[in-house]
Length: 255
Ligand SMILES: NC(=O)c1ccc[n+]([C@@H]2O[C@H](COP(=O)([O-])OP(=O)(O)OC[C@H]3O[C@@H](n4cnc5c(N)ncnc54)[C@H](OP(=O)(O)O)[C@@H]3O)[C@@H](O)[C@H]2O)c1
Image (cartoon, rainbow, N blue to C red; front, side, top):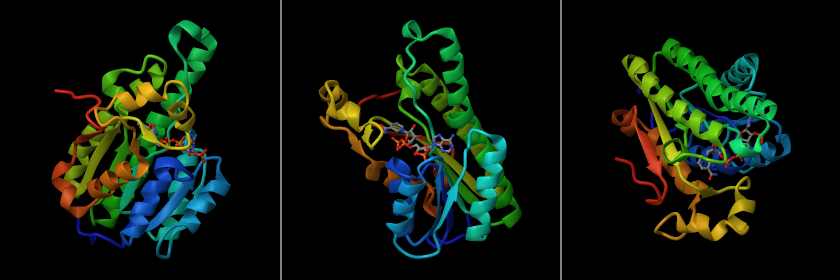
């Protein structure tokens, strides 16, 4: 990757709140220019944008569940930034659907939603970004937000676990095929970390059991995950291409 360690053009999907917001802030604090993408939460995304250090950032809205939506998002982001050096595939859904409690029609719809957003949007944005990076001839970075659930199982959210496993596998395949172009691709596999989305669960009756999953006796923070994403997107991390980085406070150790 020939671009410098800062001043890069970065698209972060799903950056209205939670991890996406923390990732956008981490890149901006590093001196990069960020396209803050949102799906439905425009107001929160404007708050993210307003909180970023530096200048030259932009806001991009769009539904990533549709292939044409991904094209529109990538076009708007690259037009505003003048290209793209880093893509962070963060947008995802996580809808509860334990098999024994879920009617078939709902099961089908929930699976389709997970596949469309978690897997296909990641694949489509990766294609759109990598194509541009190849044409730019300066290399690049793609970082996917996966999940510990891909390895540990997600009994109440099976489509989530399965699509996150697919995201990890997609990242590994692209790491190989894009390396000749100087593009490194990596994934993070976080356990529980505090965001608005999971706050009710962490604060509720199951909160103690969730914290006890880690021997540190706590959940992670979005900033801890964002720091790892920033590093995986750095020039120094090229040799980590293809990795799936566990970020789970030793709550799940895989061999
Ligand atoms: N929090 C955890 O404990 C945890 C653990 C492991 C992995 N993760 C992963 O970390 C990432 C961020 O999680 P989070 O907790 O910060 O969740 P979050 O706040 O729900 O962030 C995900 C974002 O994805 C966007 N999104 C969903 N469907 C979309 C669509 N069809 N089109 C465009 N955007 C869409 C949403 O944008 P809008 O709000 O604008 O609609 C949402 O803000 C996800 O990939 C998640 O799977 C989280």
